[in-house]
Image (tube, rainbow, N blue to C red; front, side, top):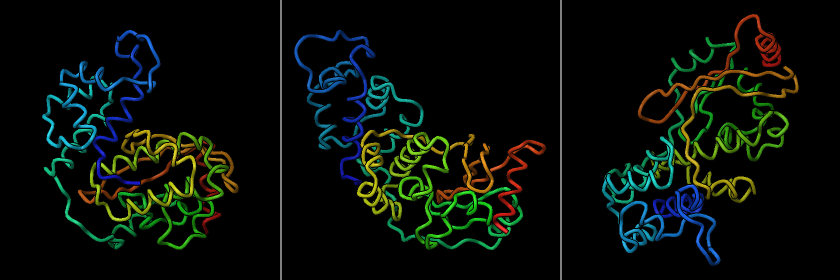
Length: 278
């Protein structure tokens, strides 16, 4: 579920994940209601009053300064993506940046479709901000075994990971993929909380996947980057592919291309994937 107090929810979730010992604080005495920092501890570490911090968590203070945000990020031990996410949530809370409402746009330029064709046999697809598959070459659909059985409007790589029955056997490290998907979706929420289809996708996955429902409130944030992914493919066999993520423009669309070095076993297995796609 996408709430109206994302800034407060983020602060509360991340506060619960910082142990007093991590922040150099004594464990203290008595029973702690939360395994992480208390509100007054985080306020003290950040140099703000407890009343001010409580108002931030409750969504009653909507205009924190950059110095306050930086101090909170340091106390919460946020990484780069998470620090930027905190700023984005603060901007949305204060309505400093409020995206205009817009409808889903699934149109794909002919030049992009030609590019996907010319990238063959490398699997490649074009994704919307929330990971809807807007266009894909045959190898990409063959790589994600069974996705081509879904109607085009339901093809979404995050939906696939959590709801498609083939995903757990296909993805060699399903847990890592699941965490990455949720962290990426959190990034979309910060970039554009009105992103078309975002709220509906979160609701669908929360209702349909216990794992997603558990991961979503953790508020992990990470933008998709180029890395490697291993597959147990039913036709191509075991293969590990590097993938490049190319962000195309301010619309949030991205092109993802999987590849393997020529002469390697993984490259040879890509030819099996090409044959399966044919």
